[in-house]
Length: 331
Ligand code: HPA
Ligand code: ZN
Image (cartoon, rainbow, N blue to C red; front, side, top):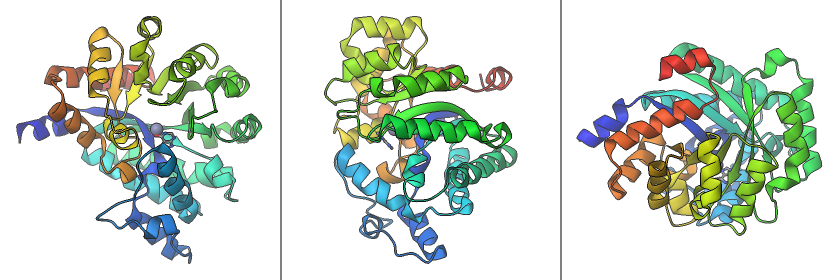
């Protein structure tokens, strides 16, 4: 219909998608076969028609990490990223910043450079073949130690710059309970010294979200907040976000599954107050919706105006970490 054509035609940017969250049951099965491995049980229980089963962040993560065991070689990481970028291109996504979780691989014996090499070659190919611009955001798993995060950053800093140039940002994800942003103050400070852009998941409906948002902004000094819609409860934090151009990367379908609230009301209120809100897909293979489906959900289930959907995509280009020359072309 008209709406679907409008969403499809809109030039888009995606700023919150986890590469490991793009692993479909079908691709996992292909990679398991190629690597002569048994399919992990968390995957074999999912079929391509029913998808994975979970009801909150913890049960999601319990399926998500075991499924990654099929990722072994640079080619596996390349194929995973290429499959996603092919879909992104088909949805008229012009710029994309992709999260990845090195510790989810190094902790099971896959080297840091295997991961970076595989993802980087796919991004380079997509930039050439599709004319999309893309970069990587390296996340620390917040339920691992601060030392482990520091080891991961050291791995990044010790590789030749030419092999890591697509990594432009640092993020923080995984289980937020009892893992406040302040745990990572030191490692974020080092990343900042090396000019990486910074962001952190401040998930909704967790205990202490407002204090976590405050720590992310003031201790980690992040430039964006991933999810972060709980900021709605603090006029001070909203003022700070507007004043410092701190964007929010919200993910409606993901939130509707892991918290049973897609936060449509909060997204609209924050947008209308002037916060740079964007819509994104999070883990599309698991939550079964890419960027267009997330936008369609928001339009169908709220009174958002089409002009506001355009504004959210402009926001995404504005708060992206693309180089200025490319940004001018995107805007
Ligand atoms: N939240 C926290 N960690 C994650 C997520 C998420 O939505 N997706 C992948 N890792
Ligand atoms: Zn996420």
